[in-house]
Amino acid sequence: MKVIFLLFIMVTWAITVSTIKKTFRLSKTIYVVTSKCIITHHKKKPVKNKFIHFQYILTKENHKSLLDRIFKTGTIQIFTGNTEKDVDNQTRKIFYYLYTIKNSDNIFQLIRTYKDYRS
Image 1 (cartoon, rainbow, N blue to C red):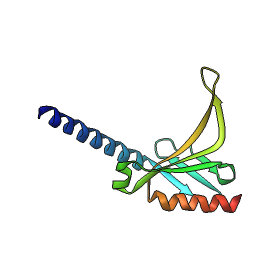
Image 2: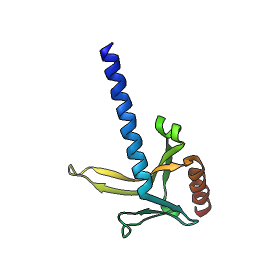
Image 3: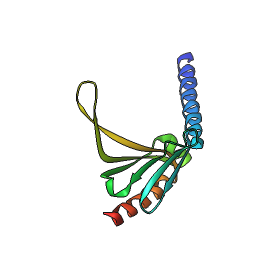
Image 4: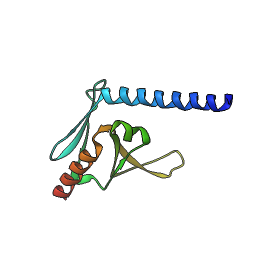
């Protein structure tokens, strides 16, 4: 019985920490979708805005964890074809992530529409 209670406490703690991290990340990052690109703006690093132009997007995916489904959020993963060499001289793909997007299905559809329009 103690093992089950301890397991319950650990799972509850993990969910709580994950929720706090998501809330913190959501409040620090702004994503702007224009007709030409996606702009990522971090409040702590305003100089380091990222621009992802639709013409360079090769693949995009919408990921949703259990917590994302509960809070109606999601993470959008974008691949533009950029790669880099790692320590072992292996080629590694570089993905861009739009984390903790409210109504990610709508935003994903908007990105798909603009991407198809730009192609």
